[in-house]
Length: 471
Image (cartoon, rainbow, N blue to C red; front, side, top):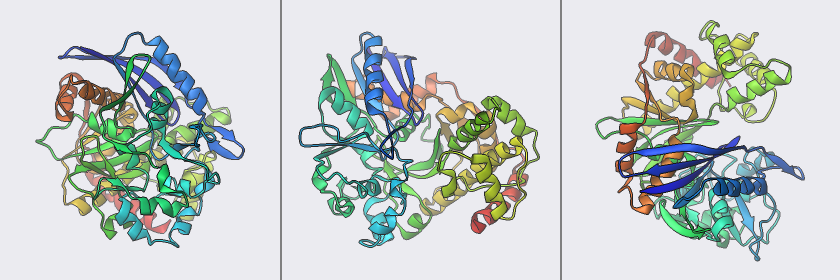
C-alpha cells in the first residue's frame, strides 16, 4: 500500500491531492487548493513562484504521512538559475506579450518547416524557444521548466522531465534528446538545458518523502489516465483553460502538411507521441464571465449556460484561436468585432455571446479531428473528454453532435489521477500505464454523450469553415 501526494497546477489554481492505493482500489481527496494569480515584475506578466512554493510546502505539512510527491503544470514556461543556483527573477507567464514578433526573428535563421521538422511542435509564440529569445539576462546557467523548478526547490535535483521538455520547440523526437542547434537559435547557450529524464522516476527526497518526476506536462498526465481500451480507435480532448485534442501515435508526424495544419507532437508518459492541436479552451468562457462581472452581471457558469441554451443556434461563429482572443479583457467586444469583420450577425445579448463561444469550440474540435485524421490516416470512433470540461454537459453534448461520434466524459480528475498513477508506477505498486488505465476504467465514473442532430451540425460546419477562411 502506498500513499502519494499529487500537485496539479492549472492556469488559475493549484491543488494538492492525496491518494491511497491498497493494491485493489484507489482513494483520493483534495487536501489543499489555492489561487494561481499572475503578478508583475516590472512590465512582465509573471508567475508568483515564491507564493506558489509556499502553498506547496503548506500542503505537504497538512497531508500527514505520504510516501512520495510529484508535480504537473502547464507547458512551455520556465525559470532560470544563475551560477549560484539563484532564481533569476520570476518565471514569465506565457500570456506576456514579450514574444510578439519573435518567431519571425527566428525565421531569419531557419525556415518554419526546418524548425518544425527539427522539433515537431506547433509553432506558437508562447513556446519556450521563442521566450528564450527575449531574455536579456545572459548569466543564466540552468533552465528548469515549471514542474522541474518545484522539484529543484524541494530536493535540489536539476533535470528536465521529457514530456514537459517536448513542449519547448527544442526537443528532438528522432533522437530522444535536446536539439542544441535549435536551442541556440534563441541566442542562449544550450548548456542551460538540463539532463533529460523519463516520467516515473524518483529523483530525490524532501523531509523523508520521495520526490518523483511524473509527466510534468499536465496534458500528458491526463492522457495517462484516459480510460481507453485497445478495442476502440480513441481520440482524446484534455479540456480546461486550454483544449488539447489529439491521439496517440507510435511516431512523430513531421510533414509540411502537419506544420501547415498547426498540429503538434508531444511526448506521452508511455513513450508514445501525442499528436495534437492546441486550441484556446474554456479560457474564453472564464474570461467573458470575468468581463460580465466587471460590469455588475454576476453570472454563475450555469447561468451563462442557461442563457446560451435559450438562444437560436448557429447564428455566429468565431475562431477561438484568433490572436485577439488570447489577451485578457474585453471578450464581448472582441467577439462582436470578429463577427463584424467576417460579415456575420453581431451577437447582441449575453446568451448569444456565450452560445457563440460554445458552438465555435465544438466546431473547432471537429476541424482539428479532421486534420488529425488526414495526417495520420486514423478514423476515430470515440472521443475521451478529460479534465474540468467534463463538468460542462452543454459543451460535451455539442462536441458529440459536432464530431458525430460518442463522447465519453471523464474522469474529471484525469490530470491528478495520471500524476498519481505515475507515482504508483515509480513506487512499484502498478506495472505500467495500461494497468493504470484498467484501474481507472474499473473505478471511475464517466458519462457518455451520444451524437444528435448530426445533419444540422454538418450544415452549420460548412458555414463555420467559411468563417475560418474569411478571418
